[in-house]
Each structure stands twice: as C-alpha cells, then as structure tokens.
Image: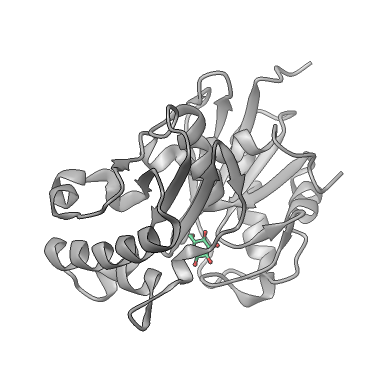
Length: 253
Ligand code: BGC
C-alpha cells in the first residue's frame, strides 16, 4: 500500500505546469520536480493532456492535488480570468481523475500556496487574520482566520483607484507595463493599502516567482501589517496542492 503521507501536487501556472511528489509530514519534495509548458491558449483537452504528461513523471498510486488559477467549488471551475473561458463550468477534479486514472482534488492556486505557507512556511506561527498573496500572472489571494481558510477570495480583482489590483501589481503587470522595481513597488503599495484598509490582517505573506528576488523591492514596500516573503517560494503551489488531498474528499469520488 502507498504511504498515506505522500501525495502528488500539480501547480498549473500561466507558463508552466509543475509537479512533484510531496512528503506531507515535512512539506518537502519526495521526488524531483518536473514541469511541462502550459499549452498556449490551452483548450480544456490540451491542458488535461499536459496534466497527464506531468503526472506520468511521478510514481502512481498516490492521491493528486491540482492547484488551478480560478475559483474552484466542489471540484468545478467557476471563473477563468487568465485561462481559456471554456474552463468555466468544467468539473476539473472529475475530468482530471478520469484522464490521470487517479483520485484528484482541485483547489484554487492561491489557496494552495496559502495552505503550504500556513502549514510549513512563513505563516506557520501566525494567528488571527492572515492574507497570503501570490504575485504571478494574476494576483491570487488566500485568507485565513485563526488558521481556517476563507476559500476563493479573489482579491486580485479588487478595484484599486479605478484599476484591478492584478493589473496594477502582478508579476505579469511588472513586465507588461515595463515597471522598474520602484514603480512596481509603488503599485503594490497601493494594492496593499487597499487590502489592509478592508481586512486589517495581522500578517501579509507575499508569494510568487517575483518574490524570488526580495532584495529588489522589500525595502520599498510600506504596509501597516507585517509583511513576510513566502518561505516555500516557487514550490508553495505544488506543496499546497498535495496538502489539499488531505483536506477534503475529492469531488471526483
Ligand atoms: C484568478 C485567481 C487566481 C489568481 C492567481 C486570478 O486572476 O482569478 O483565481 O488565484 O489569478 O493565479
């Protein structure tokens, strides 16, 4: 029988789909990390094929968690801000389970990263209201109140002075709007101020590829709440997806 403390995490990002076998006792990888490119403008079928290609690199038999950049309710995709709109209404968990031949749990990507940071990373000792933001293709949010997730918060779509937060300050916005680090930090400060004014969190954790270089921007950020950089960095989505397999009964069952 397979070790119940091991699960596969798959993180579907804007440019790549990353996966690994995760040891849930430590949050560390129990395999190498593999990645495949995310199919450009990917149809549902192309993306399911890519998930299967990614998962085929890992030992079979383990439960699979998929972190996906959309609202997920009961395994079903409900929004598609930065993915093919055909995904809306698709039963991701059930379709991925059929495609992979494994039990699959689906979770919002930022909620996954938040779970990982809360269990093993930068928020492991935090109480009260904790906001985890992922700054990638979009801005994802995970909100925890005394350790309990408020799922699918979607704060990246908050209007901040007439512009969506994720259009102001995501990793992609930095590139597409050609913002230097000062300009990007100023945009992120506006976003943080708005979120702080609405939620008054005790801690904000910043995750995502752009946070790999905190020395470039951390001292430019101003926020009334303490700020931390995610400890699991680019791996948080994978680890949180694997963790999600233990938190809910897979909707595919
Ligand atoms: C989506 C969220 C997602 C975030 C990060 C947003 O555009 O609406 O569901 O968590 O991007 O990928």
